Image 1 (cartoon, rainbow, N blue to C red):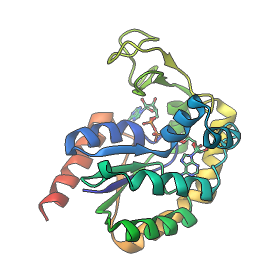
Image 2 (cartoon, rainbow, N blue to C red; image 1 turned 180 degrees about the horizontal axis):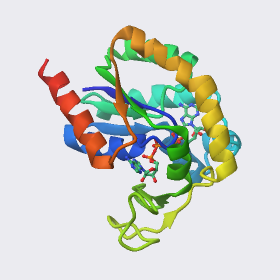
Image 3 (tube, rainbow, N blue to C red; image 1 turned 90 degrees about the vertical axis):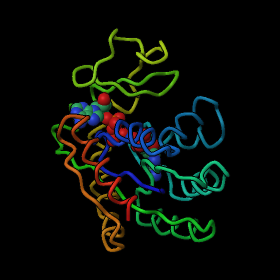
Length: 218
Ligand code: ADP
Ligand code: AMP
């Protein structure tokens, strides 16, 4: 199965993606994670991406599209991927169609997680991420057992530099302007499914899981 997960920043895409990928044995590919790793490694792509990410802006389409083309071409993608955070513009969605055509890959479903803006602000400003394994926590809604330490690997938890209130607000503006209108592209293809993300993490997951199990049977 090849899937995409969409929704505004903070909707819970990464949180759900982790669970979906495990349940359905998919490779979780997050463009945000790819860029954060590139920044950590000090690559040219990382340096360019950082300029935009720090402002809450989108990384230019041509950079993101190349990164995704490259990643999807690797053999480990053949048995199933879950794309998280891509596409985010209509140009990216159209370019992805070309990439998929070239690779002979077909996407089965787009999972859209919907959450209101006030809740998104609360979620993003309280998010903490493991520096080592990338697991995501929330200081109130999904806290680790020890405040600054990852339950899974003992790594240090940190706050993303773009999770400050001003950058978060800018990211939400960018989402409304550039990403939200793009979803129509997938609605028209008939592979788009909406989920209410303003519920408990497990409740959202059970709903997505039930939908995907039905989809798999077809
Ligand atoms: P995204 O990948 O969409 O930006 P994340 O999965 O990183 O979002 O979630 C953003 C923050 O909200 C994290 O701190 C996460 O722990 C928390 N979170 C995710 N889903 C829920 C939920 N259903 N209820 C409460 N908090 C959540
Ligand atoms: P995320 O981890 O999905 O919240 O993404 C963090 C940041 O990475 C975004 O605010 C963008 O600056 C950049 N980014 C991630 N994915 C994309 C994309 N598909 N297009 C443009 N920029 C992206």
